[in-house]
Amino acid sequence: FFNQNELPFLKKISDPEEKHEFIRKEENFFIIKKGNHQIVEDLIFPTGSKVVVSSGTKLSFEENACLISLSPIKAIGNSANPIIFTSIENNWPGIFVTDSKSESIFEYVRISNTTGIGSEINSKGIERSGWTLTGGITFHRSPVKITNCIIENSYAEDALNIFSTNFIVGNSAFKNTNSDAFDGDFVDGNVSYCSFTGIGGDALDFSGSNVSISETIVSQVVDKGLSVGEASEITIRNCSFDQVAFGVASKDNSNVSSSNVTINHAKIAAFAAYQKKEIFGPSKLDTENHLITNTKTKFLAQHGSIIFSK
Image (tube, rainbow, N blue to C red; front, top):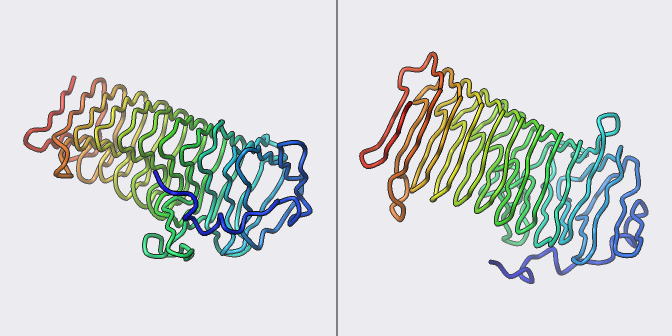
């Protein structure tokens, strides 16, 4: 829980259609018209409405301008006319959706060059009155469905951060991130038919969550392919990990169930189970029908934690 009224951007909310000619309002809908639009200051949508982004639209943001919405966003493009969120020059802070009561939908959307907010946690993140945001794209207490999207070239601590809500991420690609690609905290959801490539931290990182992962390819990851912590329950099926430090790691009272997983070139271990934080206990990992290649340490379990292998 946090007090929204303390957030600096809420002090300057005004009707967005009055400040931007490419936005029109119809009843409780804010509609962003199709076209190429440059955003030079924060684009903020109030609560109690819905935001619709027309297919084929490109929104380019200045380095200090972000998209903030207290209402759900429907950004639905198609393969021929995707929706693009990017920077005018090098980068921009990104997208923050909070306390939306209904589901946001991002379909055929390409998002690039995000940094997050707060230079202490994001080397290129902007400063905003002491407010920090680890995600380049953040959904907080706001359910979301992300399909057929590309998220790339993020300098944020988490390219995508979803917390305290439900989600679906499918048929999407995460490319070239400075740190973690997808971080989910206290979430319930599903990841399927996705790819993660060129990841500077963890590809998938979940805490206090209940998530299923399937038909997903992970490669070229500096840290963990899948990191599971803080009493999470995760199932993973029919996935592959290549060139990672750890393939799958279960930590801190978490339970991971893995089947039909392939791990190649894990520098530290293919599967690991351990306790990282004192307030939690040991963890469990159950794996069957796995294939491990070019990896010296297949299983790494700390005393008290358990790995079952079939």
